[in-house]
Image (cartoon, rainbow, N blue to C red):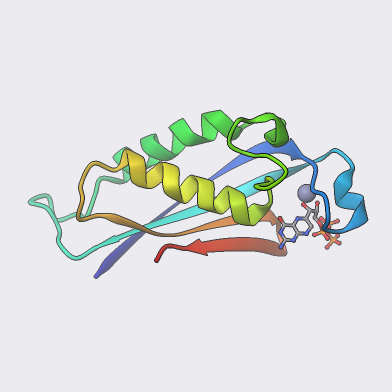
Length: 124
Ligand SMILES: Nc1nc2c(c(=O)[nH]1)N=C([C@H](O)[C@H](O)COP(=O)(O)OP(=O)(O)OP(=O)(O)O)CN2
Ligand SMILES: [Zn+2]
């Protein structure tokens, strides 16, 4: 099995209820994002998938999140708030939809909301 990882970042604002009280206040983070994809078979170029193609998919998703107030995006709501966990899940799902090769699966997405705290969604 091969696994590739690409990293990127975005800046956005959010509010979270029912976590720490301070998180209810509007505030922002510079999220660092790691996306891993996995597969068994290399193509004729000797790669699982071109990093450039992967980065293009991730950049398109970042455009939807970067410099946004995440609570106002259609995807997030009170039952699905923009926590790092839900952000990681959103990116994992959106990435998988963009990858056309059915043999390449998103394996995990990690969303670092600060240098000492992250949430990872591990795809089943
Ligand atoms: N499991 C999660 N817990 C928390 C999340 C989250 O997404 N998943 N998010 C937050 C808030 O976003 C909050 O802004 C960050 O809180 P916290 O890390 O406690 O605060 P600081 O960034 O100020 O970090 P310090 O290490 O305390 O300086 C909270 N929890
Ligand atoms: Zn926060």
